[in-house]
Amino acid sequence: MAHQDYVARPRATKKKKNPYKPKTKKQPAVQGIKPMFALVIIVLLVGGFIFGLNYMSDNAPENVDVAEIELSTPTKKTVVEDILPEVPKEKWTYMDELKHKEVEVGDYEVKEKGPYQMQCGSFRKRQQAEQLKANIAFAGFGSDIRKTNGKSGVWYKVVLGPFERKRMAESAKHKLKRNKINYCQIWLWT
Image (cartoon, rainbow, N blue to C red; front, side, top):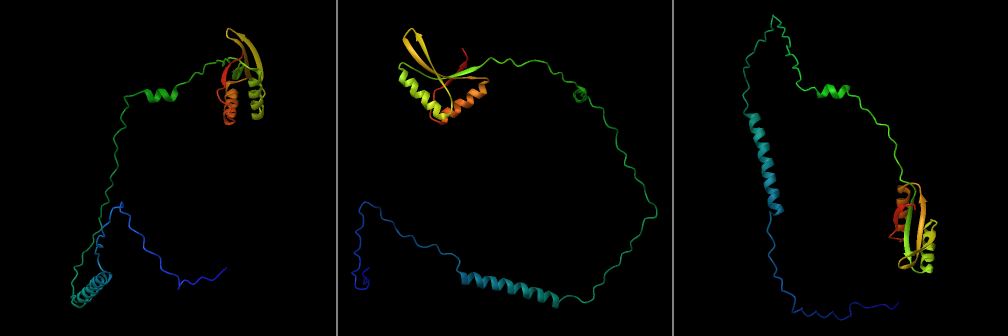
């Protein structure tokens, strides 16, 4: 790399001021307490405090009479019994009732509605249904294509299931959503 001579280099030209930029006025710097002035004040305060302590110790009276006080011990010990008033009778009885209450648990069975299915699409062309079935297979689920004849023609439905519980179907639906397969609906198995 070639050596550059920075001393012989010409100076940079000044930039032109932007006429559209507002001019900023320099504000005078705020004058604070100068450090030397603060140091003088602190030295004066500490010196005054030391002088005051020294002056008080020199002018302290030497003979101070302290009156002695005799402490008398009581001859009789008074026994004060702590007399507490009787506990008032509560006017509410629900606290006792709650302590002794027996809760009866009903014997009932949870009725399951049945197996569930999840439909992820209805298409006019079988090729589109096959493509969705392949995407579902990449997500890790098996699906079926059902051909139905309706009033408006032939439909190819992509169906997953059966799922024993709705929670399992919801879990599969969320996994499909994470794999960008949306609009799946959960129904009872028919």
